[in-house]
Image (cartoon, rainbow, N blue to C red):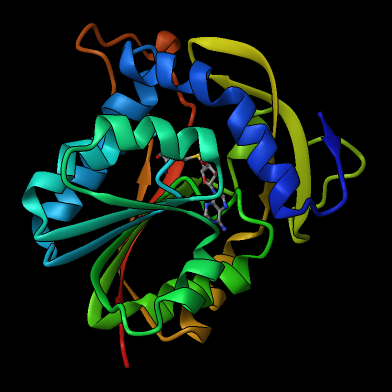
Length: 247
Ligand SMILES: C[S@@+](CC[C@H](N)C(=O)[O-])C[C@H]1O[C@@H](n2cnc3c(N)ncnc32)[C@H](O)[C@@H]1O
């Protein structure tokens, strides 16, 4: 695990291309408990409450999530910089359209498209420029449209992935970090890069782009039925919310 310089889209796309098959296997075979039990229920519950006339899954990855929602949408599109992910998603989804490009590029190419709902699940900490990505997401939303987002919890993730006490880590800085991708049940040999941002940075970036935070949730593992305080998993933790575009 190490602090790195900001990476280009080409470099990041290569990382997500390389891990795409592994990630699909983890998600399709139900190995990623957190994704199935914490993240997916949040997104499905949120999309139940929003207008799905025009849906964008921004940073859709392999499309597993979109495939569960697309039948409720009148029109849906998935965007991702990873070619490999887009090709998996194209095979999986039945009615959605896809574009292999960055969210920023998509918003420039589709100035007239105004989505009623955008899902941005586990992407905002993986994009090189939080400001550019959030500003593009805001441009793609209709007035009063909703942005449903999930990120790794910026306060707890450094502890969970074990870099909280590294001398290069400072909570208040934005820091690109390269590490072997891991989920609770499996460590992999694939490196991916995420950028740590302090919490205030996310909140200010939403605010500066006309996105009002309507709901916010701190998602964490659900307690087992056989309640035993010592064995309860405290990690991973995620931060999730729904924003509304104000103007
Ligand atoms: C952790 S994966 C999450 C994928 C999917 N949303 C999910 O929930 O399974 C992050 C994805 O975001 C994509 N990504 C990161 N920054 C992006 C950007 N600015 N525009 C489009 N895709 C981006 C990556 O290629 C990768 O597939």
